[in-house]
Image (cartoon, rainbow, N blue to C red; front, side, top):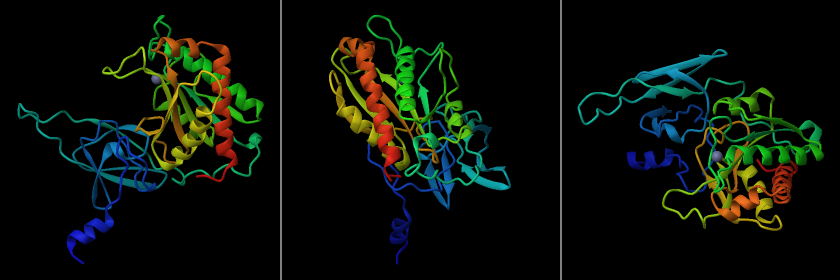
Amino acid sequence: MTASVLLAAVTIAFPREGQRFGPLDRCYLIGATDGGETNLVVAGRNVPVYRTGAWGVLLDVVPGTNSVSAGGVVRRFYVAPRKPTTAGTAKAPEKKYVKLPYAGDVPRAHPAGRSPEGITIVIDPGHGANDTGAVSPHGWFEKDANLMLAKEVRSALAARGYNVVMTRSDDSFPELYDRPKVAFACNADAFVSIHHNAPPHDKDPIALRYHCVYAWNPLGECLAKAINARMASSSGGVPADNGVMHANFAVTRNPEIPSCLIEADFVTSPAGEESVWDPVRRRATAEAVASGIADWCGSDLL
Ligand SMILES: [Zn+2]
């Protein structure tokens, strides 16, 4: 076997932005948020850090071999020296989010077979406080739309018997990395972040309107598919279905608890704004989200 064949045989297919998922690999538990400029070495292979599936704690790292330990488990990771800037000076040392070893480091058992009373869902209303999120044509804030829809989803899940934990239930702002920690703290079975969208700069904010659900790994993808299917078939005033998308968000990277992020509609479109702030429409969206979560809980998908 030649070296190149050997190399090809051990190459792991990472999902790329916008692509569908490859297999979940349990090695990739150390993550960072810097856009992949540095590399993580896992089993002798360089891995772009931004493609790892993890959340964690902020640590100082140095170029070369770093290690982190907790609970008697040591994880070592390598940070490549940063490229010199055009002025010839190296960039300043940086901090990385590194996942501490966590009990088990294995996905939670899927809740299929358990009654809703034994299943805990974390609902995360995006943004809050000074972080308004997107702004609608009338100057209304996405953070408020997220909280209103999240509360409606909580009611719809509670009516089905599920335990629901909210990352916020008022106009506060939990830090981004504290949100998935809520899911760990309450031993959650699933984590669902709720947002409303705004267009990229090159798209028409008047016309653009769709819903989609983001996930990062196959655990989250199954949950996202179940929710998106119900949202797509929800009755009346439904924005177009943009499907399940791949995204490396702090709230979707959890390698142990199935996690996804819903963009329920666009608040920047006048029609979207009208729909998002319509209580009847909101209830229908919440019912679709809750039904999707219930579908996932009742299936044996992982
Ligand atoms: Zn948002």
